[in-house]
Amino acid sequence: MNDLVLHENVTGPRGERVLVRRSARRRRTVSISRRDGDLLVAIPATFSARQERQWVTKMVDQLAGKEARRAPRRRSDEDLMRMAREVSEAHLGGRAHPTSVTWSTRQNTRWGSCTSAEGTIRLSHQLQGMPDYVIRSVMMHELIHLLVPGHGPEFAALMANYPQAEKAQGFLDGVSWAKHLPEDQDQDQDQEQGQDQEQAPIEDAIEGEGSTPQRLQRAR
Image (cartoon, rainbow, N blue to C red; front, side, top):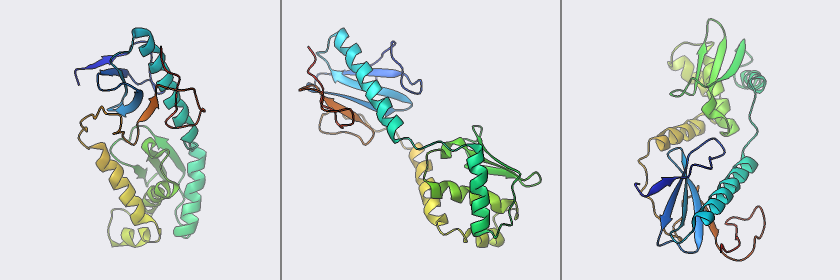
């Protein structure tokens, strides 16, 4: 990875560093992808400094726009409290009554926690954007802990009342596993694109804002 150069004048939509890789094998495309918390922009080795600035800015803006359009609405703490009431009524007979349900940015190794003596529930901010059934499953887990300590037979029996519990656990297990995957060796070839990579051919005119890959004007 020693061929990566920090592009100091541009940052990602979340403040990420932008790293640039020049490739002699890349002639007709520019791509952008996420890698270990950074943004990686791959450009042809023949690009001038002006072309690099132009395309790095364009690709970062394009990625930011796409992610903003597909990002789900962020739930508030009030939304979580409403969800808790719905889950309790639907699957626990309304027995669980939390005093507060909030997002927590301090829970990076667990999806949720509760303080049963106070009736408070905290869900990890990392659940934001995950499917509704997954968040509800974590909510169900913590609501049960307001009623039952530990994870014994009584807990398991109550958790079984949530019909998508196993599906949600499989989703969360996959997320946890993916976070610990080794870094893939970068494939800097036009025909091999990762799922989270945006690629733009350097040719023709701009087709439209939402096209992927977007065909862009040839750089001169």
